[in-house]
Length: 100
Image: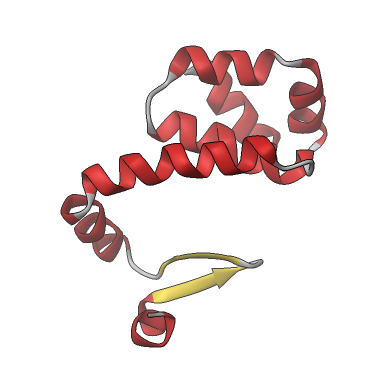
């Protein structure tokens, strides 16, 4: 599959994303229900990982995309998660999550 779509993907430090927003929008529109289910799967996967850094990079984003504000608040308010979030490179992201 990767070889078929590699031209529309960009690798950003090991994380793949779509090269153009219009491609992302088309995929999200076509697979909205599947995307929602996948977000829950992603959250479940990262919750089980011992790597707190990856956990705090991925879970808040997925919760934000699902608009699960109570769960996002619980995640951010957890002391271990909060310390990792504010000590990470992207404090602005943490601020954005908190505002929501």
